[in-house]
Length: 125
Image (cartoon, rainbow, N blue to C red; front, top):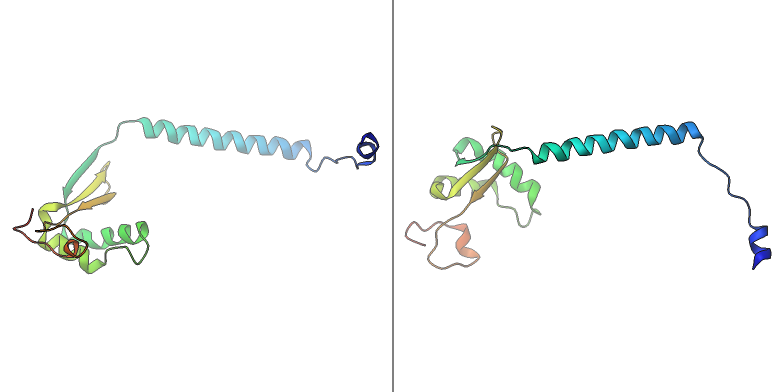
């Protein structure tokens, strides 16, 4: 066992100290940037909900498409329908004055089933 260890090739240093110092400097900068982001995340922000407008539909569809697989995302037409027919239940989230940071939308229905989510029944609950 000891004989095998003695015959093993010596490891060579692959990086120079200058490279190592540069890597440490980059790491320090990255850690500093992450800490700055973390501190910014802890600062209070202004989050508001406002009614969804017809002009918001394209931006909301872009968020929807980026957030869900294509077979699960609502279509642009479905979002336009919800904004038009169930506007009282469709809200846009704004953070620090950004136009559309997110959204919440719902519909009313008589019975809650997957198919009922595609339509709005004003008399539903």
